[in-house]
Length: 40
Image 1 (cartoon, helix red, strand yellow):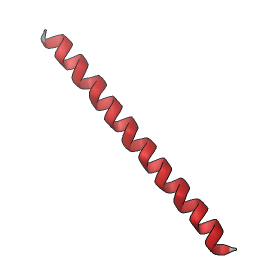
Image 2 (cartoon, rainbow, N blue to C red; image 1 turned 120 degrees about the vertical axis):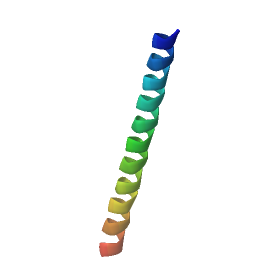
Image 3 (cartoon, rainbow, N blue to C red; image 1 turned 30 degrees about the horizontal axis):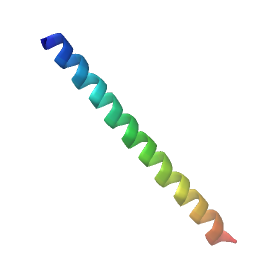
Image 4 (cartoon, rainbow, N blue to C red; image 1 turned 90 degrees about the vertical axis):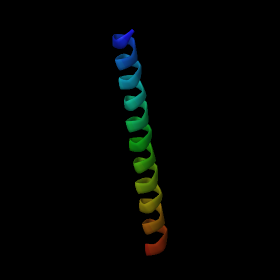
């Protein structure tokens, strides 16, 4: 039971960290596009 809980917690943490990573990539991508349009 404890092993299952730890595994669940790890997968949950992995999912959250990947979501944060995707969110950061999205923000940086939008910032890059914004800068390109601002330069023009």
